[in-house]
Amino acid sequence: MVSIIIPVYNTEEYLPKCLESAINQSFQDIEIIVVDDCSLGNCKEIVESYQEKDSRIVYLKNDINRGTYHTRENGTKHAQGEYILYVDSDDSADIDLLRNTHKTLLENPDLILYDTISVKASGEEKAIWTNKGNKNYSHNELFLSFCDRSFTSWATCGKILKRSLAIDVYKKLDIKDRLTTGEDLLFFFIYAYFCDKTIYAPYKGYYYNLTNESINRLEYTLLRTENHIKNLKLIIDRIKLFCQDHDIPSRNIDFLLEEVAQGYLMKFAELSPKDREFIFPKLIETFGAKILAQYIAEQASFKEDKIRFNSDKMVQKCFPRESKSYQALRKFLMLFIKR
Image (tube, rainbow, N blue to C red):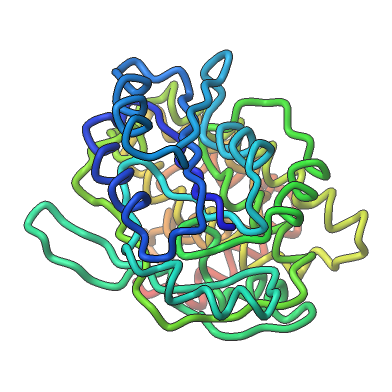
């Protein structure tokens, strides 16, 4: 049996299509677990209407709004299947996904990878970044490829996971905080480390919905940014602690952290200059000066053959003015940044 786990929070508009994609799977040995994260809409009524037609559907509700991470965890703990498939309630799965991957499941992998495509309001479809690096992996190959970014996806979409291993990861992490961003990164980093056998099925099995203007696609505010940074710090600290406990050299995660930082700075750029200057020291505390060095360099400009910074306070926060690092940075920029 495969358990399809669907977390729901204020996405009732898309839930029927998601449920249809689960119910109509051509491979029928499944259960469908819908976990209501205290959604403000009519989630329960929608699920009950489908339960009348299909007894494989289970409805769960969190006691309080706990976020996607804990909602998936709740569904996983109640799942009966040997394997689990997470489907966000505004997305959908191809109806032949489980039939086309069933033979692969019989090989007892820890993870199955398959292709994900994005869908725009116009109906236009295209493969998205989760495809990069999909192939078979054994032993610690997946983890190493994930760290050096030759395998790029930490999203839960595009994956079928072994439930017993997922349960172990949740137990090891033992997260109590409500996560608002980066939950997939933290979960998959640990999952990949313990993943011994990964099989890639070259099949477009997941439809990622770009038409939903969810909270993840809203404009950044200072308050939202501060909350996200707090979450990112928790996640990065847990990743670093895991590396220490398992003798993983810190350099192994530099590429990963750089990618996270660069992706976050794209949102950071939406803030006002005043807010950016307020937030930047918090980013340094979260990511470290080394990881943010590229962004610091982008703040540099030249005037009368001397180096200048758009916000020298930011640079000094990373490298105190009298330090050797500060002087070295200036020399580096003078040599390599085009005027």
